Length: 332
Image 1 (cartoon, helix red, strand yellow):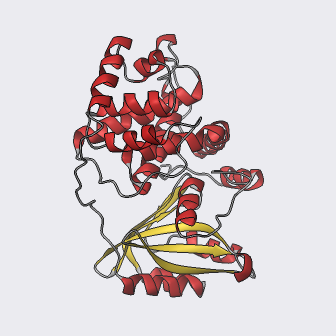
Image 2 (tube, rainbow, N blue to C red):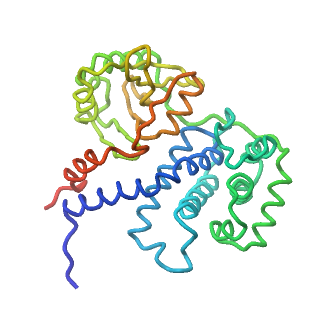
Image 3 (cartoon, rainbow, N blue to C red):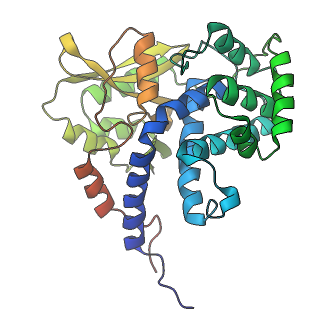
């Protein structure tokens, strides 16, 4: 049967559906982030896992992965936790776990004991992937044995065995290895901060490689020196008080973006950059990642901006973005 080709109109409809999807899972996002944080034990890897989970969850709906009754789980919370669990297990099987750094804040739903929370943290680097997932899902997030069995595609008996083995390994010491990351120099950070504070798009462009990548998590991204993100951001911020600074956070230089007058400024964005040949190779913007911003603000003793729209944009902005959506390739 002949079908209509995928078009820019398809892109607009998908963009609208993506925003509705984000609004639907908004009440689940904070708990899902805590779970990702527990499993990865790294703030940046946790957000990566969260974003991968959200994207795969959205794509799987369109592909039809959850249409059969046997594949369905109890609600969107279990659905997204299952995806996060499987993605993380696959990652661990492919590589070693990223090292632990600090305790995970705010990850105690329902009054879990300090001993349970600390034990679960140690478990991250001492047990097999399914054992780690089973313990965290049961002891921290209170999923039932049946739900965990469904998430891990196994039996209740196997989950009980995994819980027993995992809890038995809680006393083992975690091993540490450095994470692969092209850390920026202080000089490049200072030049980037100067261009941002001057709201100078040309100054930003001069710092980019020809194939620089920008990821604005949850919204999209751009590539190359012709990206419009900063030009639009500067135009939207005209006349508004704010500043940008470079801050060394856990041994890594970050870009922190503040809004408001000095007496009441709030942290509204965090950006990480990677350097290559003295230029910016990759920018990761966490503007739409409220958990990341809140965690960093708390650690440095600052106030985080609380968007009334959470991870998403205001409805009128969503409508404008959806209306301008196009395919990532040119029609022939």
